[in-house]
Image (tube, rainbow, N blue to C red; front, side, top):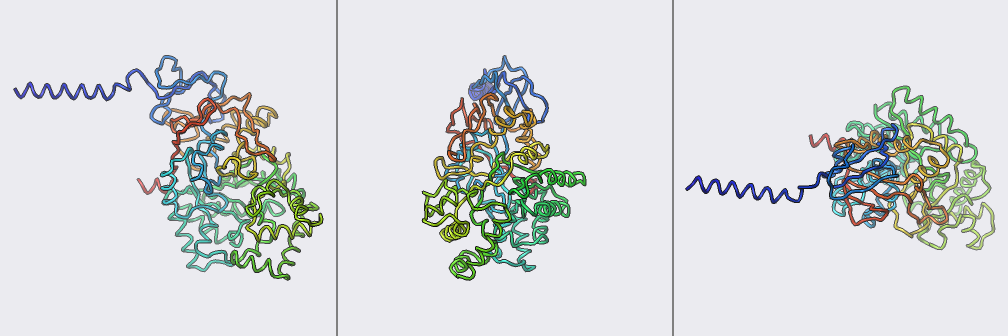
Length: 535
């Protein structure tokens, strides 16, 4: 009797297992992308093949014509590549407001590194928990920002840290690395980072290096003193035996146009000396940052109340204006018409106007002195995000050709229709692929894709991203090389990139036949310090 019961129980278990696996019978993959030209991210030539995706991973590459799948995508005539990795972003403002991140997805971006230019969350564990709770449409890694760390310990003080303050800052960096940051970022033109000297930064970078982090720097100057600024970044990497990433690599303003030849040579010399220095770039001749950068940095020392006092004090205000006009003269420009308002909370009707136009709109005569007054008034009312036309196309192309340069938007998640943002937030990769690869032939397609995928993955130790091969995370883009383009312009920026037909994030379709889906399948990408702690 017991034998009969045992056999019956075993039979029931077998039936149950068959029922549980029944949905899987008849399909080999969740998604098969077939017939496309595979550009695998290595820089090697494209090849025809099919890609099978299962359980969020690339399960097979080859001839899968007889394979069964829950979803089959015909990529005939299209390019199939790894999802793009944007290593220089600032998503913290809108990550919880627009978590689907459509401006990145429509530009082929499946992973970003945020926390750049010295600005980040300082509680990385809490930040990652928040991202997990809203479910992002893209994968997110973060740096720990020097400015944020310094402000947490010292406020906006214009002085060297005490030994205790230095230790506190280094401890904050170390904690962030253990919580999953991928490295330390600096923004050495911004308050309060601009008040720091090199030894302070070396100490913080050392804390990040202890956990195999990267040093990513918005260097101290991109104009007249760019050579010294690059050397400072290189030296920080040299002293700490750590990789260096120089952010949005450029040379700004007419007196420096043409210097990209020497700055690239400077980076290459450092590499020959054994220092892992790479750069990133957005493919536009205009930058974007705060209006505050047009004032001398000492004006911001001590915080907002101190700034307001200085702007109201006649003698100090006169001194600020004198220095502003001296800076303007050094750029070989006659006025501030090169500076365009992207977002001004105090008066949104000024969005899209340059400072000269804003000045006239306020009833002032068209003089640089009056424009400086207008700028100080705007800063006093909360400042503005700006677009600065300061670069040269020849330098841009020269930097673009450098093989250890990756493409990055220096943008955040955009709330569609809000303000007049820099178009790089919509079209960085599509502009490279459409204008500079297809039309101008500055780069080969395979080389451009390498700069968007395996190069950034290697740099920031995103070990399961950046290459299409079996076992890697299934972040995949499928685009039409004939139609990929960037309709976003400086005057009308709110336009998604064209040509990206399918975007897969960790095995799930985020863009399906050119339309965004409801899927938000992004993950937090942990740095090597967190990985080390978990082992």
